[in-house]
Length: 124
Image (cartoon, rainbow, N blue to C red; front, side, top):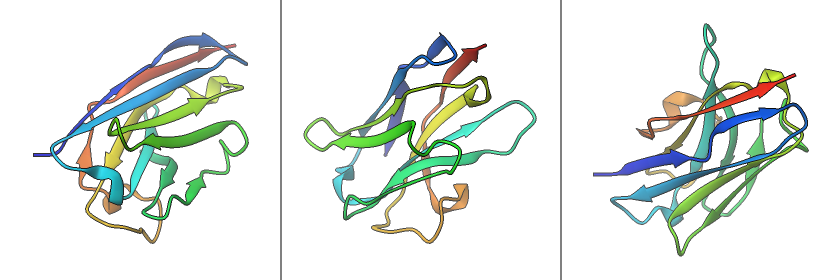
């Protein structure tokens, strides 16, 4: 059973930084796509960033240049470094994975396993 646990969320002021972590257990995730999504109240869940089998990364336009996705294979952990945070980044952040090496698009239906989420709140 694949299990994902996010941590690292919190409350920061605009311009600040946070680093989210996602610990994965239940399988060796190293070979599969992993992603971060977020969902603000009243809005649909949206893709933030993902990394595929080859280590290629992709980011939503709204976070390019500010967020960095990475993974530590030895620790089975996915990270999201978030810098220059803005109030519009406020949301619940989720990590997700699947059994695929690549994905066609960063959509929630491309992923099978989800964590419980960690809240990020950015104040102006």
